[in-house]
Image (cartoon, rainbow, N blue to C red; front, side, top):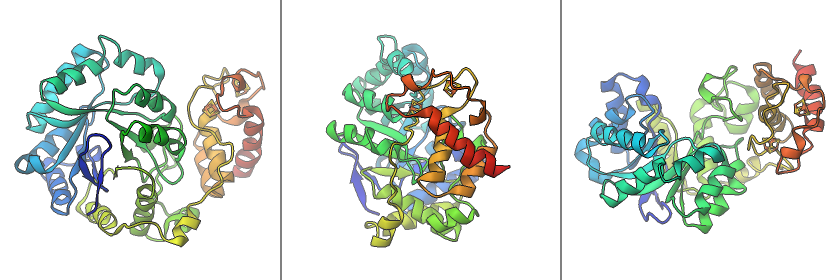
Length: 364
Ligand code: SF4
Ligand code: SF4
């Protein structure tokens, strides 16, 4: 499989890597088989986290004898120096290694959290300590808000950034990826197969936000079979300026499909370029700065569903997704509080009104 340079770390990561979240759901033997199968088929980048159940333990067991041939990235979700240091000690133990390639700050989704982790008593100090002691080679940051991560990247403290990116979640392309390029920061793309929508937690939302679906519209966008859909979704991400994409893998078959895409990808076809070119216009960047709304409207989610409806033509899917949303647009009383908070000057009230027409009325 082709490898790509991971920014200024100069590590060479396989263009498809391994997202370790879901192996926590598998029994240990199955999980280690899945991880090892990925290594045997050529994957060298493995991402895990202290927060991801026993994922570290399973990756540590599966890769113990080939540790030096792998890039292992883990995360601490604790925000203070003291607590994150405890976390990291556990991580090294679980991963059965005395050094990780990348230690990342996990889930930095707002500026307050960013500032806290970067303070004198913050978790960044643990990463720096680990680096000085030779326990971690590089420092990374992860989160879901491109605007926040772009600020983090601009501080010069981070060597890598882990972000959601997929065919209907392109927000990172606008301001974050140019920032990573300017600072030579490596980009790892997560959630390539699911549509993170605002503050909805992908795996818990109903109806499903997964792009791998029997929905006719998603089949038209990505392909008829699950294998074709995974292939298309990964190829879209690989066509962007990222170092590696890490789908969460939980079976031998999923590993085979993902590695096949990774080994065959050489660039998008002309037909794919056309299929994946969307006119996004003035769309919601999912920064979340307009909320809370006094009426409890989930503005970013409503606007994302509207974007799926208008910009991607995923009309039925967007209506289904909207049907499961709490905090719908119809509660808006036009109080005017949200629009001044939007850094992109979106006409939120008008967009909510349109969403009410397109998504509520037609879904009933
Ligand atoms: S204008 Fe509507 S959406 Fe905006 S804050 Fe007021 S009630 Fe909420
Ligand atoms: S409407 Fe504006 S402020 Fe609200 S999430 Fe979208 S881009 Fe951000």
